[in-house]
Image (cartoon, rainbow, N blue to C red):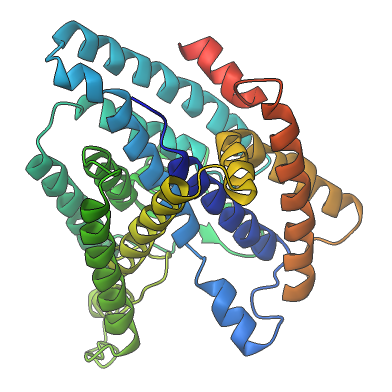
Length: 362
């Protein structure tokens, strides 16, 4: 199958959004700017990462599209093993990376990929069913299971992380991108990857539906008609009140149903727009440069922590910065990343980290 350039463009958009969000977070700059700017940048929270995860699901389906078309069961089994090897690579690298970047997404990504490997032959209805189940399970757990107990926003740490209970809770429930419900984004991506994204009518239908869902999620969050704060006292009552009320927000922490609706719809719409742009202007310089950047997304992800944040730390500019400075720093890093990606792709097929993963996992 011919590579869909727009998907690489969408990866570039996703990694750019993640860099901006993470620079803002480590500089504690989220509220240190004009209201219009903080609101605008705040829209990236949890949305950029959602695009990244959805694209992983799309890629998984595209990788096995020809195998499904041929009903090649041995080929499907080999594809499943290949995905599991990549998941193992990301699992090991991700947990090592947590030591320097507590908000890492890669170890979660490994489990999304592993779950997706076992659902390669699942029907579209099954993918949506598992997505809804993941959202429902998280909502139920959040209401009663003490979601905020381990999270520390002062230094982005997670209390008791390196314990069996801490690792399990962080992974499944109250980490930065927990399997419940974030695996739903991956499964939606798998469903999306089964559609003919080169068909304009298909893209328009998906884009329109995604835009409506995103608008509905944002509207529900903005005009929450129910106030659950007034309840009887008592630990269980307070837990229920705080839990149900927070699930009406469109914020990534906690990733409740309304957030999933808003972020998922937005992410799918962004992917559709990028695919359309790639198909319409494949040779345009911005498209080619963005595609090269998207193809090195994993390398850039590592670099934005090790090199980007590392440089800022050496300069003493982590913490207490303005939003304007955070955006400027992110912009400089992204400019360097784009130039590096374009030059690298002129000589090499894959980025450094991407090539290492391919070498080790096949």
